[in-house]
Image (cartoon, rainbow, N blue to C red; front, side, top):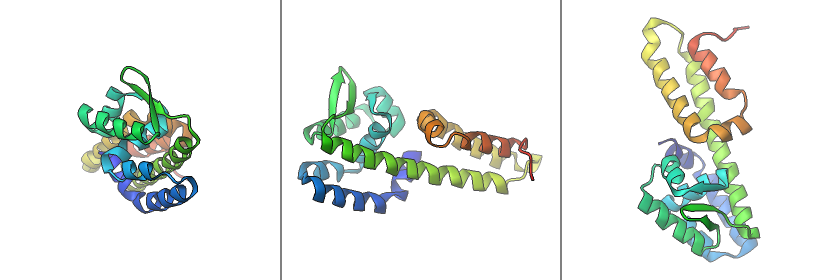
Length: 176
């Protein structure tokens, strides 16, 4: 799943952010909760979308419903999320929750930027020909998965990237 790759790429940045935020906010419960990878996945996605159902969190994280509920319980106990309705959660409105959410949002955006850059570079290397159909299809499938899971975020943060990749892979981009 792309979220695993994105989280791996920003692991060092995340550690620095967690330490800095902990110094500023003094919230040991938060660090304890966020020390678990499955909890981090849920919080990354919730930070990006602000409010989601458990079903949406399952789809975007690739985690089971039970694991998502466990993560939400830990995040709720740490004061980072709050239940808005049955099966719907949002980032809590406290100052600490907003600080952590903002940091995690920017880390996710950084990871998405790296992933989109990788796809763009690979699409530039793959010439449009019958010989490269499989390579182009693989990149289009990767792009489709990213758009399905993070389309709103990508459109907001990188409005032209999807169009550029698609044009490159279909051979419709004007080369200068």
